[in-house]
Length: 179
Image 1: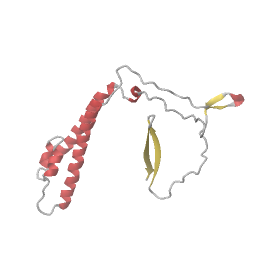
Image 2: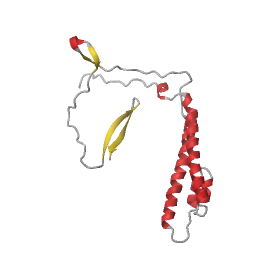
Image 3: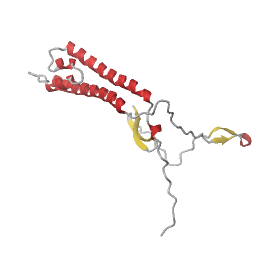
Image 4: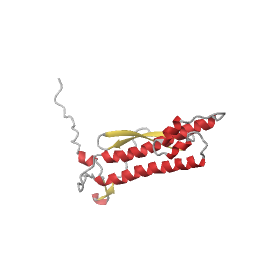
């Protein structure tokens, strides 16, 4: 039997620090509705420019128009390419409009901090490097890498997965690259 081992305990999470301020609601509602209106405007313009295309007359209807156009996208004759283009166009337009409405609705139901409540922030200063006669001069330089350093691939395209932290208890993966 081993002796007692000190196990680090995660500090309690202050939920009020994780919530956005209440002033964020109106900009998110307006942003979501504005995005939906912008996509609908593009759709209405394309419906006016091509009134004979199958399903395009429904694009004048906001939010549900792309889905109605998708359901009525029947083409007679040899128009396979146009039919596939219309399917992609209606689907992307419908998802974009639904996304804008989703952002607006999410902002209405997102828990926020009370007005005037300030988040508690803890800041840890960077360690100072000793200068002449031991006086600190500023932040310490970044430590040199201790393990093997990955070389950039020699090809014209590459990507690098990078871990990221989100808040106090979250983690994620970000992909970056160059071409």
